[in-house]
Image: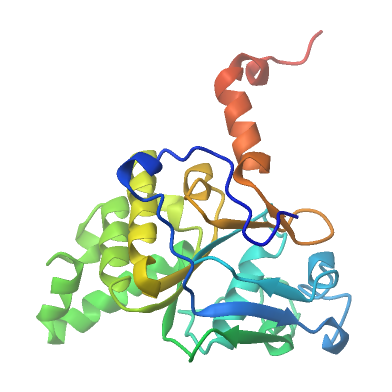
Length: 265
């Protein structure tokens, strides 16, 4: 695992914009898991090895990424930390694993250490964004000025990517901690670059901290960010160039003909 303040090795495409001056101030400094208190070792998510092999997860930078295959536990831990911070999660979908009563209980078995005092925050899930946008529209009926925060237009009337960026820009103006679950889903590559710039801008002077679950190699290239991988049997901190997202995308772009070849007869 890289040393505590090991420099990021890649030459970021964002450095030329002046975003290379990365700020380390944050709100959450550490999360401690308590596997000895888990109610089960057979039910999800307590059956995931990554939640047993590491007790402490430090947050040294203002932007942290969680990566891994679907089902690896990255979004589960993201939601658990948000819940432990008393942050509301819109329209949580329970019962994804049948009659598992402990499916959403990981937050009960972890502790959060704050740098100073508890801060407000937000949990964003692309899966539930449409529901949230509809609620905002309903509120705007009685308070039309509410839409001024989102560019003066209903989020539902904007394109999906434009709507996402309008929401992020308005919400990130509030100091706090932000948990984002795959925010790139509606964003084009160009929009993703714009989004990374937005993230870095809002970390200045300790204004915001971001913990993000993602599959995007563009987001992961954010200068100075810490990347935690959930693949394998334990949480590992990786440099950007050591992630599968970087390696596979780079190899595909350089040698895409290899990936298009069918099986030989």
